[in-house]
Every structure is written in structure tokens, then in C-alpha cells.
Image (cartoon, rainbow, N blue to C red; front, side, top):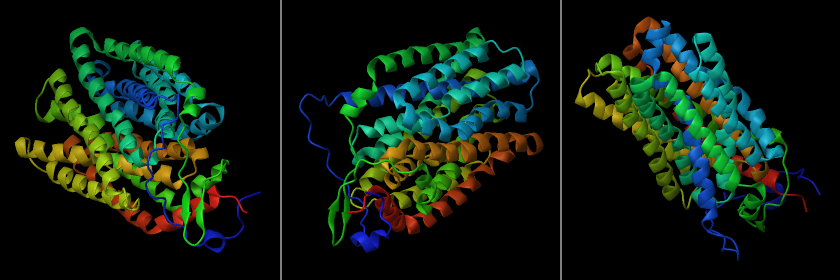
Length: 452
């Protein structure tokens, strides 16, 4: 028994994209609540992840003043985390697929929480940079492994909604990290902002370890739906492992990786630089600027959830529609943010920026669902890890750092005006990927079936 040596069309006829399938019937002795408990705990850890990552943005003005840092140095403290995530996500996701996802999640959360505590005791830029480096090491694969754990216990018809909601946890965590961090910093000092995030992370990881186990996840696992083959009936996806190389031989998946990364560029800029934007151009003190920025970051997260739900509904009968919903979300963000940053400070600018923020990362849920739908379940953590690499290298790392460098030369507002242009690259990648989608599904079928 092995993978077929002939093409899917030669062996089985034309392969159709998998239609949405109903949830499997409840099995006796299995609680319907447990999958949602897993999702809630994974979501809570993602909140902690981004609270630890983004609390830094709230104290940018304090660090800039206390340590006499430039905007590019401030940006490096943010980008080093995303850079480490980008570099380590794939190997750590691959390790998690082999070693155990639960053990990997626990270890990662402990590392990022302790590293955040080290940020609280840093006495200069170099020590803070080193601590932030280890925050990135700890957070590297959590996004991909965490969402893989969540998707493993739910039907595929909920994957866009769950992916959007899970990834929105990054924005919600940023909201809490920025707003709470700003309040704590103003009242008791910026060091206590980091301390609070670290303690919360350690509490949550202890709770996750007590409730979630590999054996329970296996008991509640929902496996891939059968693949429909015209002229040949239905082929069930056998329990096999496919080579890691299959993550890079499907052009449609490459398009998703690129689209995901480019659409995160501007969203990452909003997460990192909005507090400084309000502090400098709306003359708000630190705590009020952090609060105003938190509202916009909340819009980013809400948009990820809503856009994921819209995508699931629109693509219920035709999974290929996910590509076009992603295009629509990127176009709206491009126009709203592109025009908004050109306006003077005031209500019209805030309204347009709010609309743009809502749709700025709306493509996140669709891209994660497309990656899950185009890759075999045995390497799904690694596939989502590769998407995380793209999101971090092209978006979360590149975005804030590029804007920081440009801000030193052009000014912050002038730099922010350029950020939305990256949506053009995301739109192109999505349109090309849509054309390659049928061929991508045929490749998946060839990987997911064994020869007769």
C-alpha cells in the first residue's frame, strides 16, 4: 500500500472539493461541552500570549523617555518577538505534531511567561531586547499548535469561525495588554505591567495542564471528511501520515501563506503604533492614548470573528468562496485605511480608521481555514505553523519595524499612510490562489488516499 503513482484524475476521475458535512452524531459517554472547554482554555492562553507581547506598546512613551530610545529601537523590541515566531514556528510546530501538542503548549506558555517576568526587571535596552527574544521563543508555535488542537475536536464546517475567533484572541489580548498595561504603568510603574501579564500566564497554563490531555483530545477528535470523487464514489481519508514536504508542493497553499502574511502587515502596524499615534497626533496622555488604541485593537479582533463567521456562511455550499471573501475584506481595509490616514485629525479620520481596523485582519480566519482544508490532518500543525511564519515574518515582524524605520526619517503619520498598500499584494495572492484551488484539492486527494 502506498501513495498512488498516477494522477488523481487517472485513478479516481475528477475530484470535487469536500462539501460541508454535518457534525458527527454524539457518542455515548462523550460530553458536548468538553470541546468548547478546550477552545476556551486555548483562547485564554492566546490572550495571555498577546497580552505579554503587546503590553510593550502601551509603555513605548515611557521607555522612549527613560532610556532615550529611537522609534526604530522601540520597533525592534516589538519585531524581535515576531521575528523569533517566524523563524521557530515551523520546527516547533513539526516537533509538536510528533512530541505531543499538549506538552508543547504547556512548555511554550511557561517560557513566554517567565521571559515576560524578565522584561519587568530589565535595566536597559539590551536586557529588554534579550528578554523579548525569549518571549518570542516561547510564543513561536503557540498560534499554530493551539488552533490545531481546537480544530481537531470540531467539525470542518466551523473551522473558519473558530479560526477567526481564535486568531482574534491576539487582538483581544492586545486590547487587554495595551489598556491594562497603560493603566498599571501610569499608576504603579511600567515594570508592574509586565509582572501582571507574566503571573496571569502562569496561572492559565497550570489550568490548561490540569484539564487538557492528549488522551482526551484523541477521544473527542473529529477526523477529516471523506473526499468525493466523481465517477468513483467516495474515498474515505485513511489514517496515514504524509511527508512534511507536502506543505510546500501545493501552489494554492503557497498563495494562502503569502496572502495571510501580507494582510497582517497593516494590522500589525495598527497593533504596535496606534498608542503612539494617539499620543502624538491627538495629544493624549499615555493612559488615555492606550485606552483609545485599545478600542481600535478591539475592532481588529471583532472584525476577525465576524469576518470568519461571514466566510463560513458564504462558503457553506462552495468552499472556494473563501478566497473571494478574503479579497473583499482586503479591499475594504485598503480603501478605508488608505483614505483615513490622509485626513487631518478629527471625527472623519477616526471613523474611516475604525472601519479599516475592523476589516484589517478579516482575512485571517479564511486563510487559516483554507490552509486546514488544503493540507492533510497529520501535518496540520506544521501547515498552520507555516502560515504563522508568513503572518509573522511578512506582517507582525516586518510591519512595525518598517514603519519604525520610516518614522525616524519621514514622520509617523507619513509612514502610516504607506502601510495599507501591502493589501494589494494580499489581494493578488488571493486571486491567483483561487485559480489554483481546484488543482490544490486534487493534490490533497492524491496525498490523502492510498492506492487500491
